[in-house]
Length: 123
Image (cartoon, rainbow, N blue to C red):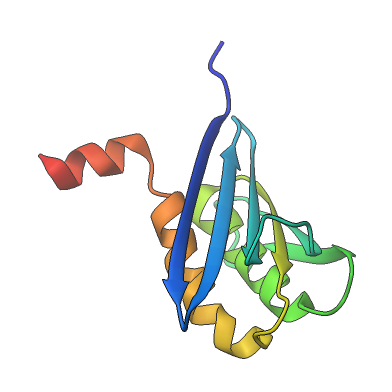
């Protein structure tokens, strides 16, 4: 039985720490994105569409509303990319949602890289 993969990373930009915790299980992914310290924030879920349908993943906000647009957008993105249920939490203290999106996108790209993709880059 394979265990869940956990990846932590951060980006320092504008003298602020932006953090990501990524947990990937066989059928799902959980991503915690936050500013300054690991905290739960606005939480969204997305379910990937079956491969034969041309439509975006369906999503919903489960908790909070402050960063709902980004949480849903990233949950849908990860669900489509990984083909798994995706839960994404976004917690921001001082930066507004729009400005944090590009930083969080880069963090997501860093933490969601699979082991086989890493091996392909280093080979």
